[in-house]
Image 1 (cartoon, rainbow, N blue to C red):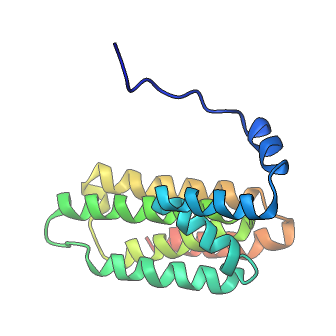
Image 2: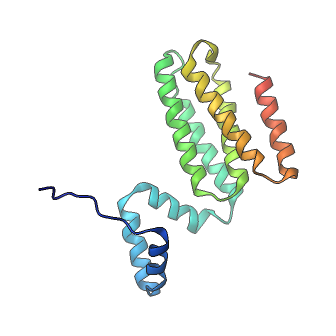
Amino acid sequence: MNYFAEMNAASVKEIKTGLEQLTQKELVEACLRLVKFKKENKELLTYLLFEEGNEAGYISNVKESLALLFEDVNRTNIYFAKKTLRKIVRTANKFIRYSKEPTTEAEILLFVTEKILALNLNMKKNTALENIYLSIVKKISKAVAAMHEDLQYDYLRQLDAIIENR
């Protein structure tokens, strides 16, 4: 007998209906309980409560924390460099998911790409590093394509400059 069977989670619509029926106090208690279970929930709620109104400040904070991670990249051993870069990309993607702003993804990923190129790793000799770089460039292109035309121009210029300086 399996005592740890998966609990069937309700759909988003059902959860929304359930939340709408709670009092304000019950809703606050539910949010606090949710925050205790996963660090990502706590980070998302922190973003929603304190940083959503200042997207530029949020992007700046994310860039600072990613810059610290780039300091730990092992440039002498490609294997460890690759592992650290994957961790950085995962972290960047996590922070990007919190925001609904279309420019946030492009700005953070452009920053990551610039930092990767600044490491001067020989990506042409390592397929994994090349694939990390190309996947980021692909994500940037996709994010920029979803933006308004006026915003696209500036980001495409930045992306083209990065690709040319590679």
